Structures are given as structure tokens and as C-alpha cells.
Image 1 (spheres, rainbow, N blue to C red):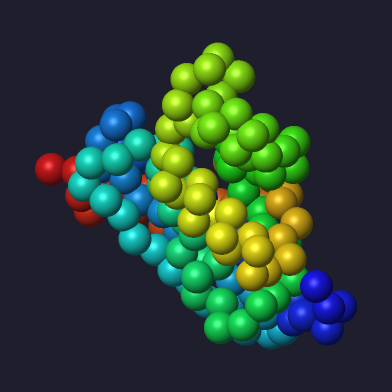
Image 2 (image 1 turned 180 degrees about the horizontal axis):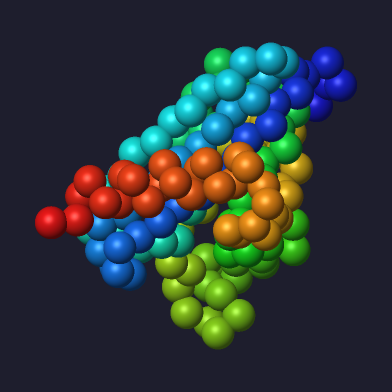
Length: 150
């Protein structure tokens, strides 16, 4: 991709009350001096689905191809790309190392499509520590999950 892509930082997180159970996700997009917050959730989901959904919703919110640094505390999300698990899954017919079908395939496929639009650097951050944006995303995700827990 061209080097003139707009640089954007994205922080994401997902949460679930029970797993499965009511879940939420949060994302913060940083571009120049602007900050945009997104959040949502589902009534019956898993934590991993919310982690993936947060990344999808944030990337879909971008109006044009960007150079994205995407920060997440989800090793599941980050490692799938940085350690090329997703490449291996595709080669193996969407089966994991245990020869089982990859869970959340439709979400992974959506992330693959978005990774073809944007130049994405996947960054792992430590959850529940000193990263203000990760903590903000966590709070938004927990809030959304709480709205759905009855």
C-alpha cells in the first residue's frame, strides 16, 4: 500500500458477563487530534466474539484506507495475525492445530477483508494495567455487557 495512508491508532476491548452470556465491546479511534468512541454489544455471545467485533466495528468506521496501529489486550486477536495463525487456518481449510473447525470463522473472514483495505499493525497491550485507552475500552465493554445482563 502507499505510504501516504492516514495514520490511525485504534484501541479495542471486549467483555462478557459469563462466557457465553451478555457481552459488550468498546473501541477508541485516534486520528490527528480527534478521538472517536464506539461501543455496542450482544445479548448472548462470548468474550472472544466481542474482542473480534470491537476490531471489526472500529475498522469499518474508517472512511478510507488507513495505516492502522490496532491495540488490543486479546492474545487471541493479535496472535492470529502477528503469528500468522489465520494464514495456517486458511491453508488447513479453516481448521485449527487440533484439526477442529476454527471458531468465529465469519468474524475472522471479515477481519481478513478489512486487513486487505487497511495496512494494520497488530499490537498486544497488557489488560487492566496502565494503558488509559485500553482501560477506557474495557470500561465501555463492561458497561455494554452490563446493560444486557438481566
